[in-house]
Length: 87
Image (cartoon, rainbow, N blue to C red; front, side, top):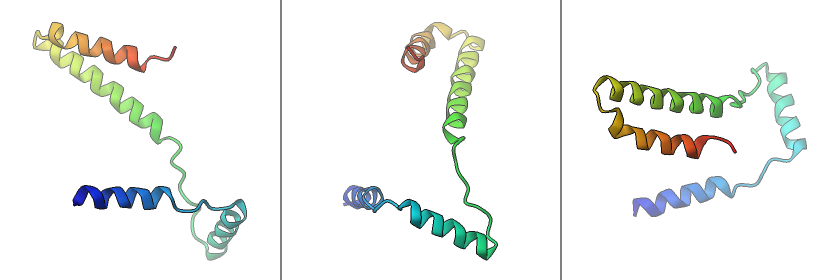
């Protein structure tokens, strides 16, 4: 039941009508007139997530190396590197 409710929430979020450029312009003008700060644009989030993921991989490699288990984790690290690297 919970799974179905979650699915409907996702569908409702993705199927809402897009905002037209005129509506966006009017919304920004209204925020400006009310003295509110401009909306935050999260254009840097993807790069931050990629950096955190890369640091987690480095941390896992260092911990495995320090514990002497690098041979155990090496196949997973090399498989990840092949999947992530651009071609």
